[in-house]
Image: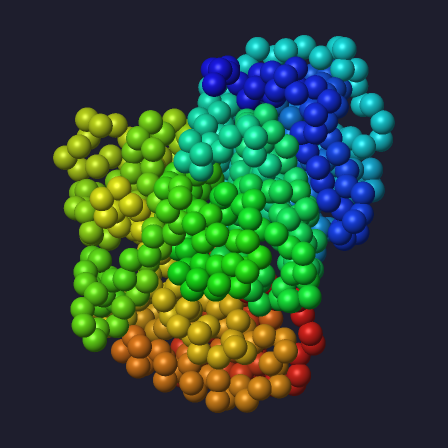
Length: 599
């Protein structure tokens, strides 16, 4: 493939090559059979140049430009327009789409020092009112769907290099406050190439997806990968998927999608909510790559999805467990093709001690799913002791460290954090240079990377390392009434206590909650041999997730300690109750309203 100086140059080349061929097809929320929106390569190029000329005329080249759009083709035009102008795109969730206020987006505007906001006409009045209320008097608002805003013929090539910033990817904050990852054109080009190599993507593929465009997997994997390949992307909104998960499967079948993906909860949702009637005529045999980038990937999810949809043409070897993060642009490792997911049974107590031993006869086990391998030309991956900074041998758990041309230069205006996170060195191997500390725990067995959890979310009880994911998974499997959960630790007088918060599915809110909580306590004591004195059963939708579906355990812990969690039923130790602001857990024993849960 040709060497490009910037991602803008790549899109210009693809537009010349592909002309009137579709770059994107966007499915409306009207359902199957509704006429989709189409965006040919030539039109994308013209629209992007039109917007880019306006940005250049208003002195926004090199400035940060906030993109506030619902999922749709206007976002794509705006993003590419920013690249064409040499501006730095800042994708963010449209508050009205997320049912949120502007608070989080306000912090992004301040942090990124945004010079303009691009949005749709129907949202521009709200955006302008918000900017005025927040005192952002110097930030310009532009509705990009109200006819030509510039003149494509006046566009000037900004002469970008691979070192220039392409966009700021604000992290979704699974453990910390959001930070803007500085993704350069070189990072973007390198990672799109890495994705294509790892997944063996080719220009004859159809890429499809429903993930939010402001999130790294949706943007890099489902919007920009088709442009890299010079193929077509078929897209739909997250809301459309969440309301009717079968719509995703219909999209795959109707458009012959070869590559798509999502986190664990998306596959669980399909298994649970797609009916036999909705599967009439569905053909999933075109799928070559079905990505699962959850951390960690659940073996139960892979098994259940494979069994449920095998009669409709799905091949288990299409599953593509992978690992990545915004700080590496997106993908780091991926599963070898034609093999499918690699499962590894390990001794559960051995894993707590930091190694993947066994399994031993009769001993409790845990099933790990490999997130694949890294191509040597793209990444170097090591597992390092997070305290001594010494590299761990194969089979030993430690923090995952990464380096490669896809690794971003750091977080926007966070020099101290960048020195610690992006400038780490392995003890005794300082001459190799700097590494990215991912904050994820994992183990290498040969070249295979197994992700085991988050370093900051590990719970230490009675000298034992308890993985929250393990407890959550066990409790979920206890009863069909139990949904998504968050497990974390709280400290009282120097003693760590386990706290278990799980949703009760909407259809089972009339269940005997006391019996469910007691069963969960007994299971945890039996399976993990740790006290389980704190169990909260909550309404659907209570468990907070990032935009990629990761459980926000740190946020859930804060909400618990601040007394902001309302429990349908709770059992809480007195010493833990004393830690909670206000001194009690709010209890709600009345029937809760029906809510749509995605956990």
